[in-house]
Every structure is written in structure tokens, then in C-alpha cells.
Image (cartoon, rainbow, N blue to C red; front, side, top):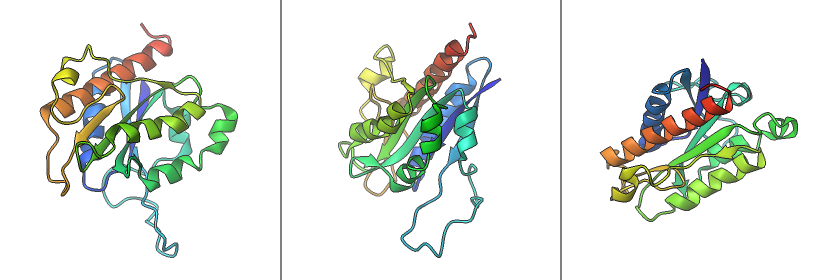
Length: 199
């Protein structure tokens, strides 16, 4: 069995829900398993770091998770049209993997959750692609052969899965958003399986 790393940061749960849908899609592909991880918060108060093990949810990611994965789904809430600081902070620490080329040739996909429908979903997805391109990863998006992509009135884009959570983060994931995220997980896992030589 090969594993797809689903790495995300979530504050109000919207990005986490997309990660769970992507994991369901990964699990649908024979020979592929999801490995779900998160990153700790960053704080200006360095004397009060997060504990080394989260109190709930998935474990914190380690560089070994990236080395061992067959593919990566990367998710973050939108922060002014960009990925959140904790996710950026994590990627800023991956220079050793970049130097060794450990991620080169692996497929990757991105996903996000935003407070407003036009609050930077696509620019956030593009911002997350940048470190993945520097690492030599192969980007996988959502093609318009996914009928829900043309019908959604909430999140979803060809660049990756997305969710419109509302200004107070109270809007649940819609059926279109969840199904598109699941489709992205299936597509990513299938590409990873094919690249790994499985038929």
C-alpha cells in the first residue's frame, strides 16, 4: 500500500472537512491509503509553543511524512489571499528535502477554505503551489470533466478544492464542495498509483 499525505492547517474546521473528503477519495483508489497530518500554530510569544502532540485531531507533520508519501494534498485557510502563516512556516523549514530532491516527481494537489466567496480562494491555491513547484512536484487539479465544477455555487475551482465558510465560519461544507474534494483525492491517488507503476 502507498500513502497520500493530506497535510492541512485549520482553525474553524472548514479546511479540515475538505481534508476528510479528500481522504475518502484517496481511500477509494485500490492500493492507496490517506495519511492525515497537520501543523502547529505559530505564535509571537515563543515562550508558549504548542505541545509536541496535538490535544485532538491528526498528529503534527514530520519531514519523514513528506519523504515517505507517494503524493501530497496540501490545505490551508485563506489569509489575505495567501496560505496561513503556520503552513508557510512549515514549508520554510523544508530546505533539506529541497536540496535532496526528495519530493521531485511526486504528484500534489491543493485545497482551501475562505470566509468570503471572493476572498482569495484561487490566489491561496496558487500560493500553495509555489513551494510545491520549487520542490519539483507535479501539480494535479480538478478538470471540468467533473460536472460539479461547472455547477457549483459555492467553492470549487480547477486549481483545487475549496470551501466558502462565511464570515463567521458557520456555513457547512456543501455537497458540491465535498464531492469535488473527494474527486480531487481520487484523482491525486490515481495519478500517484500510475506514477508508481501500478496499473
